[in-house]
Image (cartoon, rainbow, N blue to C red; front, side, top):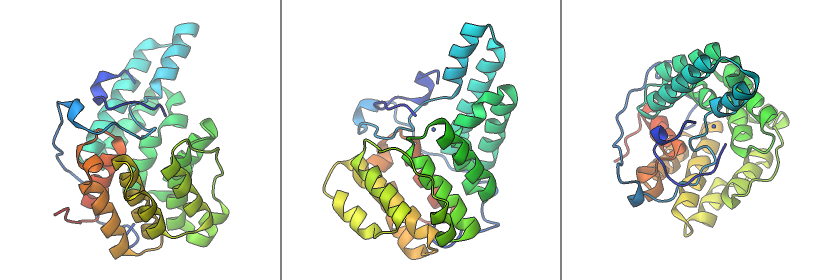
Length: 260
């Protein structure tokens, strides 16, 4: 996943609470405000920003004379899927991500976005498989390792999921290094949030988001809600174009949590 300052998705050609309610999220629909003035938003922090797996495929096809048309269509499908997810239409986002794979099967090893959609559709086994593929392709991806754990904690429980935890290289972001160790070894989410509460807005957002997700893996609904809603309402969560900022809102929507 590429690091970038805030940009609109379209600008590039291009990575709970109680256990999720089994029947509550076949379709979540939500409209978020768009920010045409990106300069007003905090710098985007996530390595998940705006990397489309089709970029690598396009380079490969340019060298080998592969099917450029399919690559372009796959890229468009991923864009549509990301847009739909941001709008809260999780089911339709997955359809677009799957379409991208049909058009260009090489996409599957890089479609972390698809793994997130699978998580929110309670398709945890498929989500874990997707994130394991992602980590195999990028063995330094901290967030994919955590999301694989989140899927497998729903399938096998926390103890077994931790035994299966995917070890990855060191993340350059202090907050994600701390979050990774918390999920891998067990820890205190309140300490994670406290450590980054007076720092940068992006760090506070990520600390709050992953603290909430940690509590969700423990089926602690109240604590999960407290921290993820704080992430949503933070300056970074409410104004950034980061895909994970949108995810925090989708998460709240799918759990029927009010952000007010």
